[in-house]
Length: 135
Image (cartoon, rainbow, N blue to C red; front, side, top):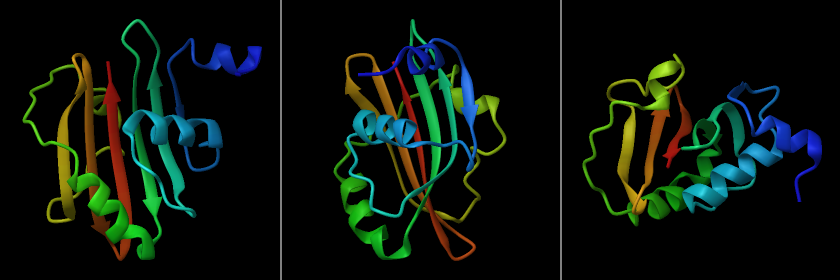
């Protein structure tokens, strides 16, 4: 159960960086995306937009030895091209996987109105997971 202080955080739009990306935000990414994130995954960026239509985007560094297992999870996501004009990712500079770095990119609906996009990249010898989840 979230504390009163924690509840107020989720009532407003906010952004986290590598110093403030906490376990609660990481748990939201894992739960809402349906992905089992590997031990050692490090949250780098997170932006949240509250209800009525809640949304979040995240960038997470993935340990190299976990890449293959995570990629197999992502491959199970049904890929459906979806055009969105209201993407939260358009509001930040850190959501821009470099051209040529994308290993896998899947997007689709998890339910009637729930959108999910997951991108796994290899950038400068490191692996990054980008997650976009919105209702």
